[in-house]
Amino acid sequence: MAEYVVEFGRDGRPIEADGRLDAAAFHRNHQAIRAVLQQFLAGKSGDVVEAGSGTGQHVVDFARHIPEVTWWPSDLSEQHLKSISAWRAHAGLANIRSPLRIDLSNPEWCAEMHNGSGPTNLLAVFCANVIHIAPWRVAEGLFAGAGRYLRTEARLFLYGPFKRGGKHTAVPLWAVQARRQAYRAQQCSVR
Image (cartoon, rainbow, N blue to C red):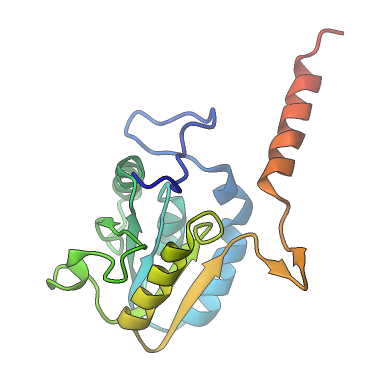
């Protein structure tokens, strides 16, 4: 596995017996992300790839609320692909396809994009929390693949802790973790 892939399930959160992983970030941001996607996808149909799906929670939420779209989750990590498949089975939604094993550092992405078993003329690509932690070649491959597979009126949606005007737009992960540890220490201390 690539050195930049985040491993969910190693952060102390439980892994379900069926392999479903749970990411805390999903619970914080899924509604806001979905609202932005719904603005663009309203009244449209077609294929959307989620590049770097991680746990699979976002794609299930999107598919549930935007049923006109066919969702193609993807990841590079085998553990994440298993979690995505488990979330897909758990949700039982017909508009989620089997996850694709996409290596975003490769501009071709994956064989399914070329052999007829995957999507080719995409309505959108959604990618969350990937390019800020990955090597630059991943960003280059993401953009090259999006340029190759997105249809003319399509969009590439990126979500992550970016900077605007030189200032971070999100609370850094280290600050969230420090707050969580301080809270746990306070709750567990002997008084």
